[in-house]
Every structure is written in C-alpha cells, then in structure tokens.
Image (cartoon, rainbow, N blue to C red):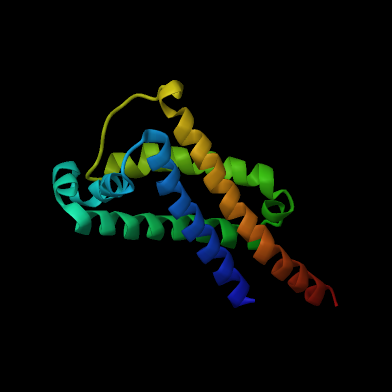
Length: 160
C-alpha cells in the first residue's frame, strides 16, 4: 500500500514539475535554465538568482521538484480520504490545477524573495492557467492510477 502511495506522489510530482518547466520554457521561448533561475529567485531574490548561473538553476530544479512533490502529496493523501478525487479525477485534477495556480501566485510568490505586486489580468495568465490545469491533471492521473486501487482494496477489506 505505501509503495503505491509513494509511486503516485513521485510520478505525479516529478513528471508534473518537470513538464511544467519544459512547457513554460517552450511557450515563452526561454532557456529552461533561465526558467529555473526564476524559480530559485523565490529563495535567492531575483538579482542573485539570475547572476547565479548553473548553481542557481540547479537550486531552481530542486525547489520545483520539492514543491511539486508536496503539491502531489497533498492531493494523494486527500484522495485517500475523499474517493471523489480518484473517481472523478479529470474534473478534480482540473480544479486542483486552478487551486494550485492561485495558491502559488497569490500566496506563495508574494511571500517569497521574488515577490511582485502585479494585479490579476486573465490575458496575462492564460498560458500559466492552462499549464496548471495540465499540472493538476497529471497529479490526479497518478493518484487515480495508484491510490484508487489501494483505496478500493482497503474498503473491501474493511467491509468484510
């Protein structure tokens, strides 16, 4: 059981986090190392992160993966209690992606060293929102793939 939960978190978090960086890079036509420095700027501040070269990019990748693993773990553990999250994983994953977008942009980033005070303008965030919808779907897919089987087995055992 624990093995399947760990797989859901690792696959969901690492794949969603890695694809997020790759797609942001492709959409914005920036080197992925620059995108990773932007992530690192949350800890280092913008000037230090963008002057930090490869070590700052490596820190950005580590931070991206850690955040993605945490975000995946929250969904996976919630899905063990709320089976609707795995039964209806597509709409729930989309909603989770939107929630993740707003939490990251309006709670996490403002309290980081990369804080900016830009007002919400939907046209400026369309690609980010679409990417977060995909991000949430990936996490929900792996929760469905690995946790729903575990939950079904546990429910069956408990019903005996």
